[in-house]
Length: 338
Image 1 (cartoon, rainbow, N blue to C red):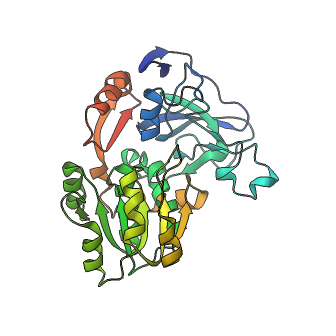
Image 2: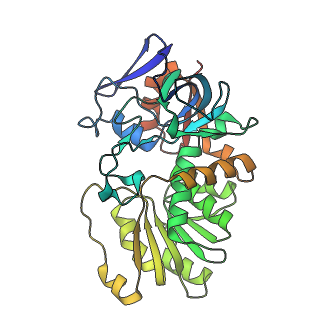
């Protein structure tokens, strides 16, 4: 089989290795596609070298079919189409209060342990979600990032008729916007990249640039002065932290989707003045995966527009080098059969 290894210093190697039999409780997956996400790009840039045990196969957004089944595994058959929810929570403690997706010693597969950017991947069976036989495996590779979006929207409490503003029109931002629209909300996407704005509009979303309009006035006009019921902060920059409390209306909810590695200034007076709520959101739970699988299966949203490019696994070095030079791109998939 072919596997890829992140070696550090912005370097990937493509190697040949023996296919391994699954251990008891595991299945072996023939990986179809593995998506490149922002975390993978951070790894490539060396930002997670203290966490990733090099050389390491990375990747966690994937789809594939079961190739072999280890002992003591029930409920799955060879040939089943599946995706992996890459959270190994076997070290959960009572102090985690049952929220195993954010347990203190969570192992995130593809970061803390080997991931999906290889032709065959052995994983614990409890991480699997089965897909319908007619599921498009290219679209299925979007289920992991889509589950981030379904988790965010679920935690926000967003309901039909409310107004949601998504700050950031990258891959996760557009997925959040699509899920919010599917709920029945009125959605505005704020993004500074003109090509991403055009992409969002082509997908049927209301997208604007805060560099060209006053975003607060725009949202106020759209809502007859009520402002946003929910704000999703996805961009992770100071400018969006500054404006999120401005565009949130009375008792608005702010979902912190972006990861802020350092302390940042936030206007806490607005939380007092408007009785705002700030809600943290991290990865996803089982129900979010099932919701995402349903959305992909229904195929009622323009998910195919999210896929910018598909490249053979053997081109992994060129793919990561090109992502740095293409800020307009959305989702690149690695074809793990090539």
